[in-house]
Amino acid sequence: MSLIKVKLSFSGGMELLFNNIKQKHIEISSTINPPNATTMKDLILWIRENLLKERPELFMSGDTVRPGILVLINETDWELEGELEYEIKDGDDIVFISTLHGG
Image (cartoon, rainbow, N blue to C red; front, side, top):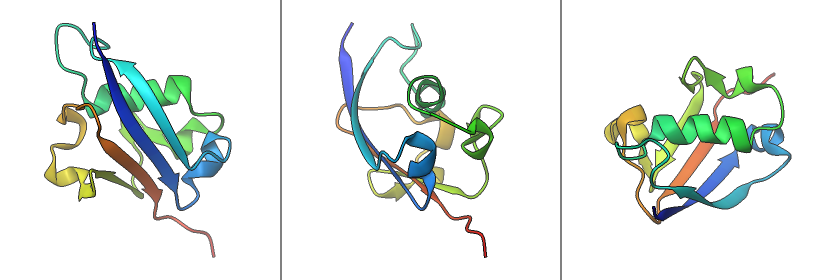
């Protein structure tokens, strides 16, 4: 078993759901989903279980992030990287930005 180091960032209001954490460096087991590689779907579920402090409905819808949350993987829109199927790699920089604002 090895550990994958990932940098997570939350902004645009997302940080309020995570106890005002804007950045967090985490280490997750590469065997979080044996025998398959750890994917964004696994990471999102891990974030919900381990980091999310309140109102999970504002972060997730079903088993993915809710509409209105921009997800960047190494500065690239996750839609170009395969979304939930993207395989997490050591050193990845993953950003969650809420694009929904009241007014």
